[in-house]
Length: 140
Image 1 (spheres, helix red, strand yellow):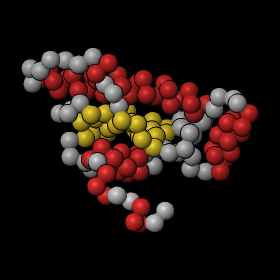
Image 2 (image 1 turned 180 degrees about the horizontal axis):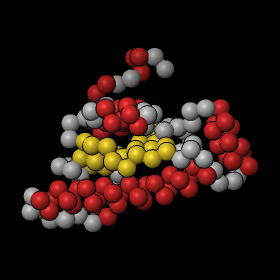
Image 3 (image 1 turned 45 degrees about the horizontal axis):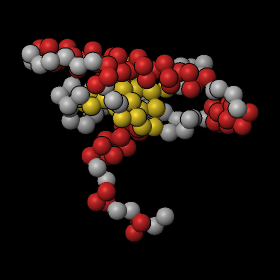
Image 4 (image 1 turned 90 degrees about the vertical axis):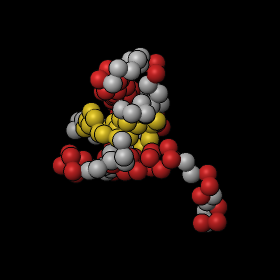
């Protein structure tokens, strides 16, 4: 693809946010602690499973209610091989289970953060069905 194939007019704020936060999923805990996310967002619920290699972090904007779940992709040959083997044999890679469980936990954690802020402001509380995360990342 050449640069002339990219239409900058079609890039939305959500696209830019997702792109930025997908890179943050690769940060170490110390780097994440020092990171300043886009205005209004804060990182919550970072997780890394050293057994499966799964890693993700969630960002929440309490004011807008936007939730972004950023997944880190395979970052070594072993993880990539394990994922490729699972896909080629029709088996379930353990990172899929980790990702599913994480997404449920992340939505619940984001809802709690948002509702605490809304309660402080006297705004109506949201339900889990109001939390529709933007999911971004790489690999599996």
